[in-house]
Image (tube, rainbow, N blue to C red):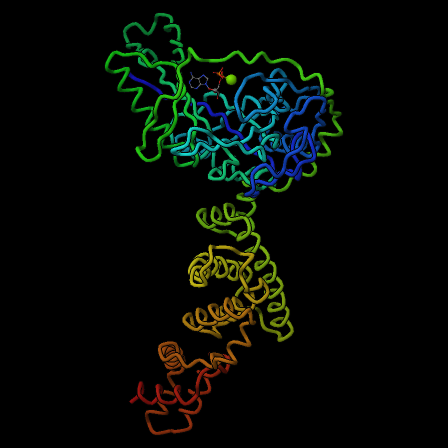
Length: 525
Ligand code: ADP
Ligand code: MG
């Protein structure tokens, strides 16, 4: 038997609106005191009426547009009825028949396809409200409930069963998370429960798909293509990281394969993820499935959008991760790995862009100066060189810098302004600082926030006293000036002065002249 994993996702994301979905209680995921951000509406006191949060609607449409969805022009909310202690109304206001967004897709990187991408179809994205939170206390025969989260706007995205592995699930969830963050619609932190991924997994028997037609009977009409039927799916919930979602998928693929190979059947059920054991466990079987008795919410008017409304939201979409990848690659000529770092760490990428634009003006100045001096710039692609030096320094030095200051790679907390950083890059480019010198200056910049020139002056780094660097300059001058070397060896002391002068010129006057003389004498003796 040959099985192909078939996986579909249901992903919830809390929207980061100021207030809740149907009332003006604060939507504050960081509120630690229970039952603070509540009101008669989200506690569903009798006689209260919900009012839809326009910002939440807009944020779901933004997500839909970013995911190439169609936007429903006429839609409405529905009641999903069920009883649970975290749901004070006894129903959740949700959308069922007419989700705000439908028929979209998200492309994930996939080495197995010729384009390098695989499109995962998005069935729908709808808007609903979150439930409260239950706290089950160990050793107590009661639980506590916190309604701060009750009524927080929640978008639910459902994919078609287009994914095939834990790895693809990881890529999809990571890219979606990045898109939601770029859009500024959700913080999408899985550990905080702001993004919740549920995976549906089944195995499809594809043994029949490999029908072979031998040469001999190729004149016969081709066999009718074998259409494999989807297998029984298992849903896994209670997953609080993207890695666990991928692990749960891989675990289920193994578990279901073993069942089928042992001649048993996969049962349709909901399972949970035990992160300690790295296993899924049974939560409930299909027999307990509920009928939610959906019906249109009578207390909320239907929603209607004109094309202009959608166009207006579309025009407000920011640059998305994939657009940024393309732009960074083209604009700065960076490697795929570097581009990815700047796309995933958006703030770091923004910082880099700021530095790069400073460097562009520095390069322009340099060209201009050279032109005025009547000399052609010796480096026609100075901007490009500067961009690449800057990317290298940011990516290799910033993590150690920020960790040496006891921080995460948190750009907001960094004392080095993009302007000061660009100045440092120019100094490095002109070799006015050795690489060790540059690292010292950079560390000092991170601690003090001073500009590099100030630090160089203070630390007396402006003068090149680095022996190996001076030796390299001396060697170059010796090779370039054979006549003066000959003369000096024949006893012409003035030629040594000339050679020292050449080293000074080569280091733009930064070399320590005493050291240069010492090295020259030693090398030529
Ligand atoms: P349900 O009615 O059980 O909620 P849906 O048809 O709404 O099922 O699908 C829920 C999710 O499960 C979707 O992401 C869908 O792509 C996925 N799914 C549906 N059928 C299968 C299957 N046979 N194997 C894996 N995933 C599936
Ligand atoms: Mg469903």
